[in-house]
Image (tube, rainbow, N blue to C red; front, top):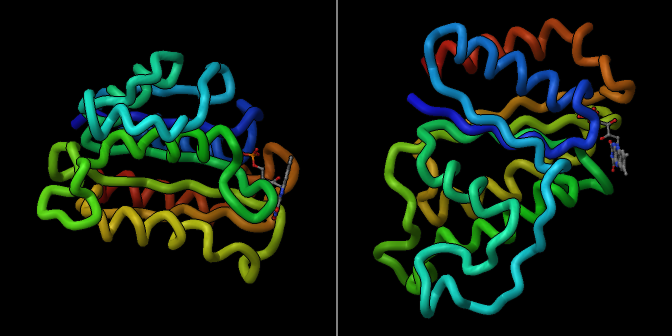
Length: 189
Ligand SMILES: Cc1cc2nc3c(=O)[nH]c(=O)nc-3n(C[C@H](O)[C@H](O)[C@H](O)COP(=O)(O)O)c2cc1C
């Protein structure tokens, strides 16, 4: 099993990255391969709506730092996406990846039957952290997961949602979240 982790926060010792690292550490300790990308270190553009991925290429025709990220995600069995909530949604670093992930979809993705180009059996772990309490922004994961389910991109999705986390190390005091990370790792192994 190969996992790829896309860490979107600019805070490398922050909450979403910290929780993702707890998960990838357990996977690595159990002999799994993990490739990690810090999206904030990369230079890339959002989707240019050129439709190159629907007309002349099966991959995104933009060539930049996101190109190897898109390749690794396509090959991985487990995709870990970790982002802080900014302005009620995922941050720009992850949104840029989502927009470019349009290149995974076939030209017939609306009508089917083959809607995407990814191998089957992929699992998703979505890690999202926010300063606000749990009554706020509970639509962020479903907003994207509804698309993923409609398109059949993932066989199974797991959500790790950390609320009331403001300072970068707050997650360390949250046994509920650390236990959820362990449970998720056990399911993946
Ligand atoms: C630009 C910016 C926008 C933010 N917007 C929100 C928001 O809309 N709602 C919220 O609950 N927290 C918001 N926060 C707080 C972060 O989501 C919170 O501190 C989170 O735990 C940070 O995750 P990280 O430690 O992984 O970077 C914002 C923080 C920043 C820097």
